[in-house]
Length: 254
Image 1 (cartoon, one colour):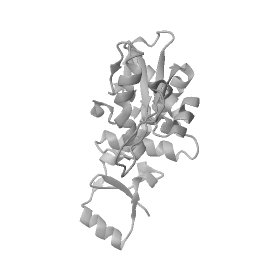
Image 2 (cartoon, one colour; image 1 turned 135 degrees about the horizontal axis):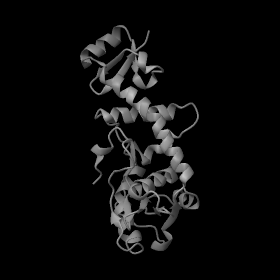
Image 3 (cartoon, one colour; image 1 turned 30 degrees about the vertical axis):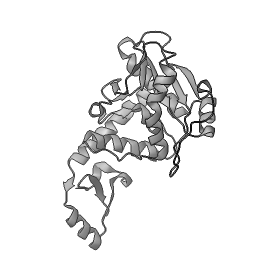
Image 4 (cartoon, helix red, strand yellow; image 1 turned 120 degrees about the vertical axis):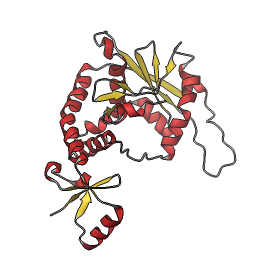
């Protein structure tokens, strides 16, 4: 079971692509805010889509049927392993103590074919962090590597009385892509985290100093004045008048 409390306030492998995102910077800013909120014990609600539920439900099958026969002694891990005080990763499995394997379980044929043709950048970054996490005590070891296991299994259809797996041989329904450590990418990730830490810490300080208002008072205040907006929209939080209502934060507009 994932030791989630250890990663509160830390940047995670599964979301690191958001920290590296370009564009306007909104994705990066939103993620840093989520990390700051998690440091205060406020978690974002998980979006339990059908795809997400399907993936989680079938990871253990991939481990049992695909990985264990090929990687003798592979261990199911699925827990947070810190890289440093500010970031870490949660590999699904680890082989030989230093070879992380992450599992993805698409439910559609087209998605599976796309994923085995080319590793998505977000998955690549995720596994780079997993490699760093399991090798942190021996970072100088050469030829550090991990893998991505992609396992196709048919989704259950809503309202269907029966479920039948795809009529393809198991060996055709999974692929394992070895991924070597990329020192340049790992350095980019660690520098991105280092740059984000002061921003996270400032957010934590400002949120901790927020004025607390009861929900009823907030409701009627907004009905009359409509002066507060979601904190994620604030462009200069260090100078903002911040309000906390339960586990939501707002800032006052002039």
